[in-house]
Each structure stands twice: as structure tokens, then as C-alpha cells.
Image 1: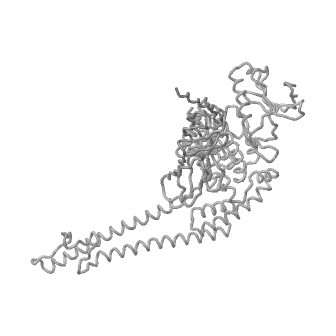
Image 2: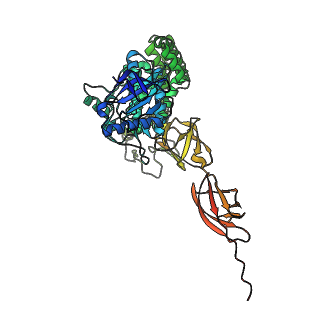
Image 3: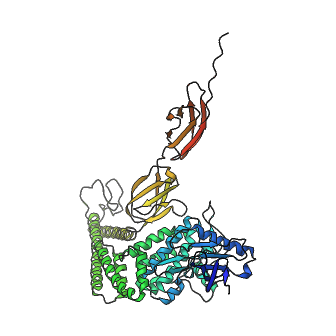
Length: 600
């Protein structure tokens, strides 16, 4: 074993991988412990391996986040021994932790993944895709926080497409379908992998399993995984829905970015009163069994309150989800069983009222079509014909006997009743369809596509943290109702604006278009003599060596005609391209006017 590398004194080995060995070491100059990752000797001469090692060092160095491993030092590509020195984490990895704690509360699993999602959002904002998110690459540190490690196969996204392609590298059980197939990977690929980590922590099992890697990859590509509620009903429907969305085969159906996943998990843990996931995780790590036992009662109480509140709002699916979660912990909970019975009676009453309404409507229709008035009204049903139209009903003639007339009347009555019954059935189907659509779509989130102008803005929705509009954030799902969008232009280009929007219930996509007003541009003219400045024939003006506010009515960048004049000097005309919200400085040299030639 090595005893020393550069200024680092090796203490012991703490990890071993296919590319490097990780040692616990002491920085002899700064007198602190570090994790020293040293490339294997047989790879030191491999150009590709050294390049990958360098990329890992440079990638980590550019990322600053409390949940991302911090790098201290790098040997450089020309060093005889390639190494990376980082902060020394206390561990364990999430893989080991999940094995030690097979029954992690759903909220604690969410608290862990919230920190990883936050770290990934920071990495993605810097154009870094991890591509190997798995339990082995996430470590607990100091019994209070989470650290994302090993950016060894991370790649930088290209500037134009915001995606990256490369070799199929990663861990089979956690790779996204597009990564397996060698297609483009982006931030949503990391979210798929993070979804597998959350699934493992929450259920104790991996979502994709098989006898060999080939079977596992096939399961991932086809999107076959066991519903998490079948494994562990205590998760509840909300976390199960989050897991299903993360593990969608189609990247478009996953969360658009890590921040959206983080917000969904924050909303989930907030149901049980967790407003500081980091603090809650630290409390859990002190004594997992004791915390879990006490937390169980907290989950039951908060879910009962949630279910009863949903009952009052007549939100039956939400009420049943809350009550089902309680019963998965305590199947004989009297309070919930009583609420479920009341819910059942209420549902039956509503069903009866619905059918009663349909029957009443049908009866009214029967009366309308069977009771034919002596005077033909101006508007009749399609069954009762007007006097000017030929009727399908039998018309008596002088040759008809009373028996014939009676038979004709019976046929007419039967035909009328048949038509009325068909109308009642049609109305009944329409009522049922309307009720089903209302139940299905009344509270379903609507898909909202953002189209701001200009595009380089950040958007805050309902008080959330502002997010930059772009490939990773241009659409979202919102519940029907009122929402507030706040738009902030990048680089002070636009006037901040607030838009109040009411999202209507129902299926389909809502497109939200909004144009911001551009801020004036600043123009600062420096000349060799004090002078006047006129922009675009008078739309703006002022003196040299002062900032002149120039309107930008149409776009962020506009070209303006600037005229600089001074007594006794010739005019100078320049064209200047200005940017909204920015100050542009130009220098001009004014020439003295020539004295006119004396007369003859």
C-alpha cells in the first residue's frame, strides 16, 4: 500500500473501484484529514483514463452546493500519480444504510432525496449531468446531511441542445431507458435514476430486478416495475404517484427538472408537519428505530386530519388515500373506520340522488311527449310534429272503423313511449358522462406551457423560488384555480411583472403567453468637448458625460442613430446597438469647424 502521495500521508484504504482506490489521508501542510482518490497504477499511462479523471476533478470543482462533495486538490494531468483530494465523508452510503434500515419511513426517504434533488438542480444549472446517480454514490455525512459523490462519468451538456450523448456508462439497475439505448441524456435522465433511489429507500426493494443485467435493462426499457403501494401500502398514494412519474419511460412525462421533484417531495413531507427536511433527517439519524416508532403516530394523526378535511371538501379520492394509509398502519382504527362508513353512506346517497335526478328528467320528458296539447305550440320536441310537417304518426281517415282507430292510437302511443324512453336513456347517458368527466377532470392538474417574451427571464409560480425559463423549465402541471406568475428579466433587461391567471378545469394544455416591457438602454457619450446628444431624431437626448435613457420599444437589442453636436464643431453621427437595461459607452471626436474663406 502507498504510504505517501505528494503532500498527503496515507492512513488507510476506505474504498476501491475499477478506476481508483480511495484512501483516508492527512494533508501534512494543512494538517487535516482528506479522502484521497488515487488512480490505479496500470491506468496511469492510459490517456483516456487520465482525461476522465481530470474531467471529474474539474466538474466537481465548478459545483458549489452543501450536498455535493467538495474538492480540495487535484494532481494535474502531467503528474506521475493522478489523484483527487476531497473532503472526508463519514458515511455510510445509502446502499449500506438501506440494508441496515430496511423499514425507512416514507417521509425520511423523501427528506434524503430532497437534498439529492437540490444538489442535482445545482449541477444541472451548471450544465453538468451526473449520469450515475445510485445509492452507492450518495453518502450520509456527520449524521445530519447527504452528499452526492462520484462525478466520474458526468458530462457537460452542449450549449445549444442542452443534452449530451456518450457511451453507455452507469449502473444497470439505475440507468434511464434513453441512457441504455445510447440516446440523448439530459437532466431528466438523472431524475429517473434518482427515482430508483427513492423507490429503494421507500420500499426496501429496487424497482427493476432480474436474474441478470440483460433482464434488468429489458425491464427498464419496457417500464415494468411493481407498483410501490403493493410492496408497502404505508407509502400512501402521493409518494407512489411521485415515484411513478419519476420512472416514466418517456422523459417528457417525468418531472421537467430536479427543482420540480424537490417541490413535490417538500409538499409531501409538509403533510406531516415537516418544514425543515434537513433537521428532521438529523433527528431520525440519531436513533432510527425510536424516531420511526414515534413518527408512526404522527403520520396516523395527520392523515386522519387530511382525510376528514378532504371529506368536508367532497374530495373523495383524496380522503380515501389518506384513510387507506392510516389503515395500512392500524387496520382497526375506529376513527377512520367510522369515517369510511360515513363516506360510503354519503356516496350511496349521492348515487341515489343522481339516479333520482335522471328519473325525474326522464319522467318530465315522457310527460312532454305523451301529452299533446290541442293547440300546436311554436316549439315542440322532435317527436311531436308541427301542423305544417307530415307526421310519422298514424292519421285517421273516414274509412277507418273504431277498432282501426284504437289500434292506430295504440301504435302511436307505443311509438311515442319508445321514442321517449330512448330520449330518457340518452339523457341518462349524458348525465353520467358529465358526472364522470367532472369527477375525472374537475381537480386534475392542467398542463401549462409557458411562452414568455423575451425568453431570457426567470419565472416564479405562486411564491416559489424563481427559475430560469429554458429547456429544463418551460412547462408544468398546475391544479385548476387562481395562480400568480412573477416574471423577472435576466440582466435587468425587462420590467418585472406579475400576472394573475385562473386555470380552468378540464383536459388539454393551457398556453400562457406573456410579453414583458423592455427597460430603457443607457447611453454614455464621451467627447473631447462638451456637446449635445440627440438619439433617433429626438426620442431621447441629453449631454455628453451623462447617462441618457434610450427607449427600447420592440426588442432587447436595437440599433439607434446618435447625433453629437457642439457649437463651433462639426456634427458627428454614429449608429449604436444598445441592449435593454445595459449602459453602452461610446467615444466621439468632434472636429472644429473651418472658418469660412474671406470674400474675394
